[in-house]
Image (cartoon, rainbow, N blue to C red; front, top):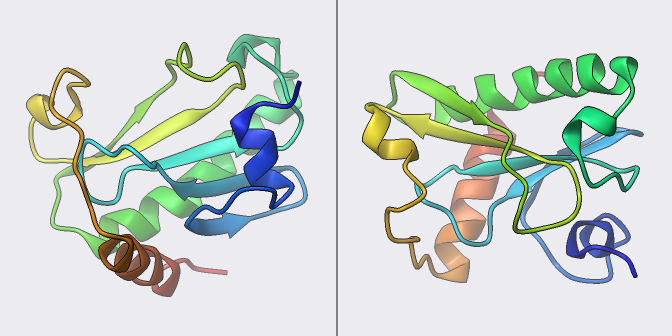
Length: 132
């Protein structure tokens, strides 16, 4: 059965997509811990990040860098936190989270409840800062 991320990739369910290449997709986390919290997902469905090929891991990092720089331009933050956790969805993925302190990337924090309009505003803001 396809993961929820594969369903997003295949446009079977909607998402706030930030960027896409032939191998990867970036979209806003549906349950963010900070505004701008974005997921980087390989289009090839692999459960464990370290089961990706060396080439996929390096290409994913380069793709993520472009998105991270756009998030950094979009929000006041000291850095973009990068995390690979992946227990909640059986599809490798990377979290990019704008942070000003370590507390900003604590997944014990309550998830933000953002309106669809605010999610769209965030999506458009980040997209406007993606360098092509």
